[in-house]
Length: 198
Image (cartoon, rainbow, N blue to C red; front, side):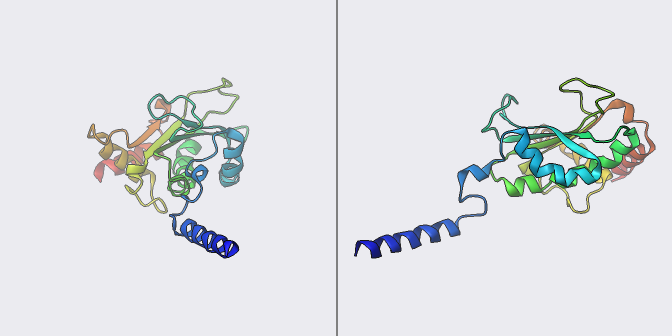
């Protein structure tokens, strides 16, 4: 009788686990691994064809943005792998690298509330441990449906960031940044003009 009860209980537990939403069966799966090595092993294969590697990757506390293994913000930093990388290539890579991570990170880790990815300068340009970003995009879970990530263009990303930035309530939900020296590049100028036209 005891063995039968144990078998019934085991079946019930399995059924309950199977009924949970994807990613909810194991609490540790609600957030990505907190260290760079594990995150790089996930994402480097996805960005190497674009000419990048993960230099830093970490979970951060949403209130302080300090590193926190239980943080709900995921920050990824990518560095070009070649000896040269032009400003025009940074602009071109911005949308391509964004698509690698979004909406994947929110679908994969249900506990994440926000995410950003920065493209960094070559070490020959700035060898500091945490160099200033050349580009950045930050998106919260609340804004994940703002664009179609499969087809989104640079102009659409810029337009969406402008739209979200017009209200204090949404300004932090969708943010795009380019280093000032990129502002005169024709590719970025054209995309901004298209974004302004709507």
